[in-house]
Structures are given as C-alpha cells and as structure tokens.
Length: 248
Ligand code: NAP
Image (cartoon, helix red, strand yellow):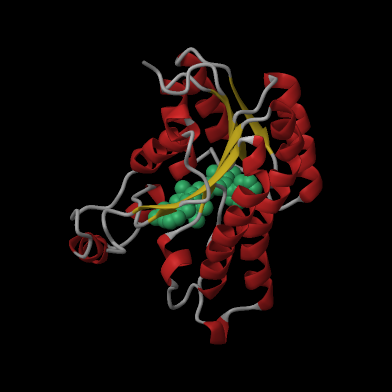
C-alpha cells in the first residue's frame, strides 16, 4: 500500500540534499509533488523528470522562500496546477556560520529570513487553502542545533529554535480545523555537501552517534511520510528528532 496515494505535497528546497530525498520518497509513496528551488534550475528539471517517471504529477517552481510575495504567488500557481494541497514541507534552509564576534548583521538577517521567515511566508500563503479543505499536514525542518544550540551557529540555531515555537503555535491555532503542524529535527545527515568535508572529521562525528552512522535524506523523508500520511492523524505540535540517538 502506498502511504501518500492521491495526496498533493509541496516541498520547499527540493532541488538538492534532504528536500530532493523527500520529493523522491513522496513520489514513490504515490504523492503528487510540487517542489521549489532557489537557483538550481538544471537539478530541478532532472528531478521533475525523475518524479514524473514514478507515475505521479510533478513540477518544480523557482521561488525564493524568504520573499513574502513570491510565496503567495507560488501557492496560487500550485493550487491552479494541482488543486488541493494536502502536505507542506518547509525544508529550504541555509547556513552562514561564524562565531558571534565575526558574524555580520547581514549573515544573521539572511539566515533568519531564509530559515524562519520563509515558514511564516509559506504557512500564511497555504493556510486559506488548508482551512477550506479542513485538513492539512505541515512539516517544518528544524535541526538538532535548534534544540541544543551550537557554537559558531547562533544565527542558524536561533532560526531553527524559532521554527519550533512557530510550529507549536500553529498546532494550537489550526488544530480545530484538522490542520496538523509538526517539526522534524535532523541530526547529522550526509548529503553532497558533507562529502566535501574531511573524512576523518566526519568519521569522528559518526562514532559519537549511538547508531554509529550519519543519517541519509531517506531517513528524514521516511519521517516526513509518516507525518504527511493519515498514520499520524492524531499527532500535532510535536518535534521528532531523527538523529540516530544524538540527543539521547
Ligand atoms: P542543501 O543540500 O544545502 O539544500 C538546500 C535546499 O534549499 C536547496 O534545494 C536550495 O535550492 C534550497 N534553498 C536555499 N535557499 C532557498 C530559498 N531562499 N528559497 C527556496 N529554496 C532555497 O541543504 P540540506 O542539507 O538538504 O538541508 C535541508 C534542510 O534540512 C535545511 O533546512 C537544513 O537546515 C536542515 N538540516 C540539515 C541537516 C544536515 O545535516 N544536512 C541537519 C539538520 C537540519 P538551490 O539548490 O536552488 O540553492
């Protein structure tokens, strides 16, 4: 049985890494997938093709999640192209790491805009559609760093902790309309980005994780399938750590 058969999903930041993994697993589970990207046009076209080959409707949209008006326009277009919107995965995110002493105001603001304000933009844009439907599942991508903090990532940690507060508030505001809002806090997930890091350093990180490996985009995607599907119909306002036991 496909867990997302017939559902329509939007995944922000679908062109690479975790977002691309979510889009692929969603399509395997029968969901039609609208996904966004910021600049990776080529990767987006390839993903669109790959998802369509899984037999679902799929479309990539160039849309800056940090921009309020672009989020409104995106939802309008997706609603026209797909009809109902059952699942929104707010996955797009960036890092601009530095110790506070060296962190510029611009790098603080940018990370908050892309990681946190984007979630306000997208939730506000999709809420009318989901309210009308009287159902919806919103999944927001935080991080172990948002739960625990991390030296050199004050901007990122603040944005990811903010996502948790925002999501819990949405669970309270929208619950009576059967709109669920949950958070996933990934630990160390191995993507193309981490392939460029020093292997010895990465091995050290793996050794410190109870399950002794980094996570894969599919590990995160599977948690999203659960939260997007009717299997989680009575779950809202929760933070699920998908981190191999890192925070235990
Ligand atoms: P990634 O490989 O760098 O991919 C980021 C994605 O977000 C790309 O598709 C990118 O599009 C898109 N994006 C960036 N800025 C955007 C904007 N302004 N508007 C729309 N899309 C934008 O990142 P990742 O590692 O897959 O991470 C995905 C999410 O998981 C992020 O929220 C991240 O904070 C979180 N996370 C990751 C880890 C990890 O270990 N990797 C751990 C915890 C949490 P383009 O390709 O067009 O740039």
